Length: 201
Image (cartoon, rainbow, N blue to C red; front, side, top):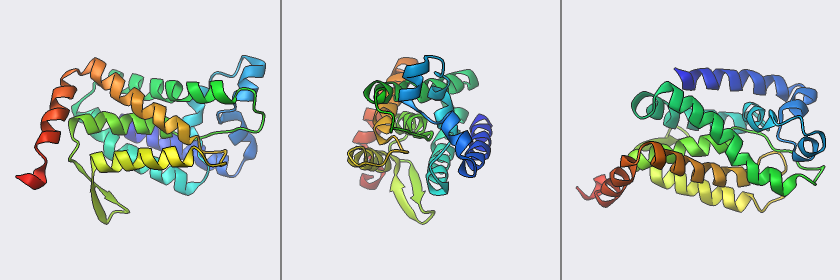
């Protein structure tokens, strides 16, 4: 249920920002402004509720739904899940903030850091789970996650300013770390499942 609530709030906020640049500018990750004022650290969280366009929003929210509902219902308690999502939003942005705090041209938006954290947490428990790309093409969770990282790394070297692709990488690492700390059994579960892929049975 919490995943659905997050998706609804994110969708409403993002749609309002699509049609209002003032809203976008107020909520996006803007390291230069944050560094100048020292009062806008709320942007570490609000960044996750605005997106560059409808495609960006749709991809993030579908990914959050597929991976997040599993974590929420079967792995983490509600409080653990809420703390996970919120802290992932913040911590995935810290490196990008430090890197861009003197760059007045840089903006970033999207829940991608937290979504990447959610995705990689679920991969630890269910690497051979299946997600349907474009609702048609079946792909294993672990392959989808690795492909997502490769794409993010490639795009992080492009000049696109509104999607913080570097944030995805830190979100993924945080997702693995958080899960291993709270659920250390996830390590052995992951290794056991990787050694026994369903297509070899």
